[in-house]
Image (spheres, rainbow, N blue to C red):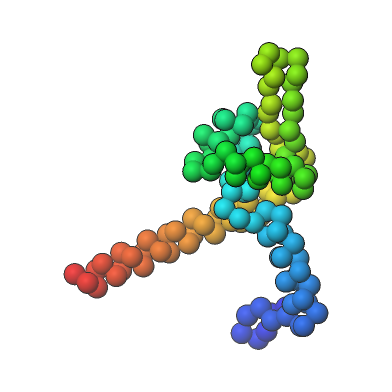
Length: 130
């Protein structure tokens, strides 16, 4: 609900519900890497090493743990081709990962807007200092 000034104002039950829902979402997709992994997999299926190269800065141990979490929560599927020699393991997004499309788009838009805002402020500060 918004008040007269257009600011968001929630009742106590609405606030508790919102805190709980956001907490649940952040628990599942929060952190530095999970959404980056999902975005990298949106290009198509990837093997572990390809995924590690695509998500710059992530260690093998962290990637392994994040993939397990994403698989447990239904966003990523681990596919093993045991007929291939050597065995080929690939990761792909599930249909359920499509439920994050609006979230990812909103974060992308906000991130670009925020970066531009910071750059404008930085330019203004440099002008004032000059």
